[in-house]
Image (cartoon, rainbow, N blue to C red; front, side, top):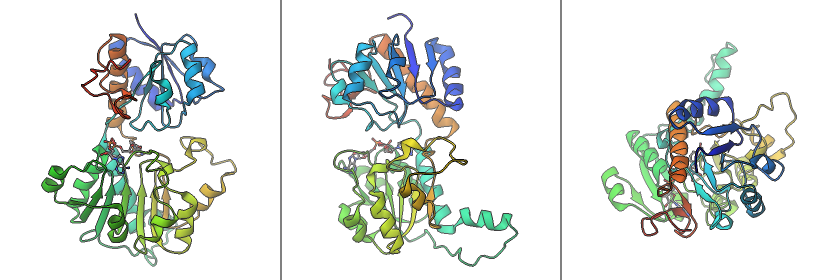
Length: 349
Ligand code: NAD
């Protein structure tokens, strides 16, 4: 393939700035679309070799067929999570690559920003002092030092978070389907089961991918087993939490704080300005009414360093594809839903 033609979906001015800067090196033909990639916009992919998509572009089996018919042979996700793509259906037709770790620091630091803001209520203090209200009544927080944090998922982001929380002097408990005992030993935390995390943690932070197993892992039953007043932080994926169950737990004061960078039905709202519109999603609207809930619109990844890394890795992924090199960041169905392993040398199909 000579110079590939890439259709970028769901783009914003900040995406274009970073990708254009990096594309000077590659010289690919890039067409940016503001629209999400979906059944209604799939026709835009005609004549392109690759599509580049983001977290809320949902690519199911039918869309895969259309993309393939249109000549697309590569889906480049410019994100780490890949729950939005049916890569089983794509297998044998379209390669799928992602950016596995562009800045774990960005997301881990954002999780901590949510924790500290909720704990010390800086989001509320900001509004008070701007209104010349200097009362601190109702802003009482707690020391992070000595508290127990439960970290679910100790991959790139979970590890960074653990390092930061250890710096606060917190006790850290963690759960991962693939525990890294050596890292736990070096860092000074212990792995345990989910039940123990729920029972013992003052702060619980979610850093596992969204899979069949983790779908709504935070639900009425798991919430019931948590400490009263627990702080729940989700920078993973919205569907890790049953939001209606969380709202009930907030109303009963079981959950004391919730910091949510992701939301089950975020795709309709997040990344867009609805400040002059009516929010018709009653669950999201209810969440926004709680003083002890902080919602950010999937901005955990949003740092200069992360955007530069996303652009660099995504275009490098495309370049590897064009040159027939091993796709080191392929999401390979055959390699059990993970990065392509050396056994297949990136040539699964
Ligand atoms: P990673 O692949 O490095 O780590 C994920 C970890 O979760 C792995 O250690 C894996 O073994 C573990 N895991 C898998 N299934 C599990 C299960 N059932 N229970 C517990 N642990 C399980 O990924 P990462 O870079 O650390 O990212 C984690 C998640 O964060 C991503 O999947 C993505 O959904 C989300 N994310 C969010 C943002 C944001 O802007 N908010 C940005 C990047 C990633």
